[in-house]
Length: 426
Image (tube, rainbow, N blue to C red):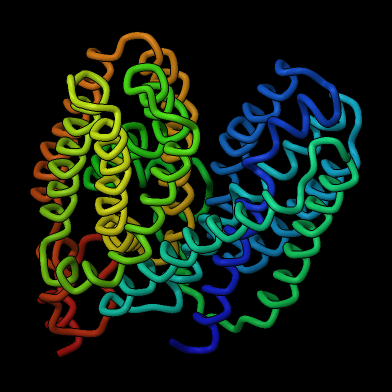
């Protein structure tokens, strides 16, 4: 890795650390510590999603026009102000405004950092770069949550103020670190269609069939996995399988541990295979995970067997996530025309945010009350991932689907096959 990429990875780890540091305790902080009630606490969590949905369409255009680094720095300062304000807020109005600032800043960090990774990598190194990003994100979330849990005291508002102050300081430290990055920027081609206006770039994106299919696939992926972790699947585990809160924590730890252990073990396997087939395999693995979850809650085994099966479900999800991290994000980058990686990254982040907003709203009530239909529905969603991935593979060029086939180090953008690039160079 070059110096720029090292700093970008530090940025990914620290931003994830900040997120894990405070977000798990937001509900308790607002509802109990500040005494604002469960309704306000629920609204705060909703504001995070709404703020992201509002700013992400504009973030893509800003990244294309100004570059990812200035956008990232603005997002970090906004998140720092939101975090500090949240730690000092005592009324519902200020809490909601602070949460909006924090949520908007954190939402924009993701596509900005992803675009910087694209600019600092080649087709050959991109999968490993995004695998490292995902590894550090999960490590940061886990460590942040662990340390934050030992710092907070529900009987003391000042302990939460300290927590948010540390998070704000971390974002400002990250500003200083990222300001030193000297990353190459994707060239801007004057007069290229869709670069002049945001409407034109969105029209160009929607005209890219492969990208549209990837967004649909991404929505199903995030809806059927990440959107269920802390809502539908956990509610199902408690209500149907009788899982204790400590066992639920163990299951989440098993998910993170699987990612950390398996990430680089599966990387070589993933790099030499077609991306569409890797994603299709993830759908099958997750279908098995939902079948195991079905046994945990609907089977007639002992409580120990049910708990072991439930923990295995989260571990299987982690294996699928480890396979996706070096696959999805690099594919988004390779589908983007020159200069529009920021727009494509923001669009995919918007799809992810929609899935994460809708997933808990649908899965939570279903997992808590309709146990059999819940398992069947999401098992079918997982099989749908496999079908959608196979269909996506037909829209990709050989090099987009399997970058190891490239005979040139030239990054292929916008659907141009490697052969055409090599011929053009000759």
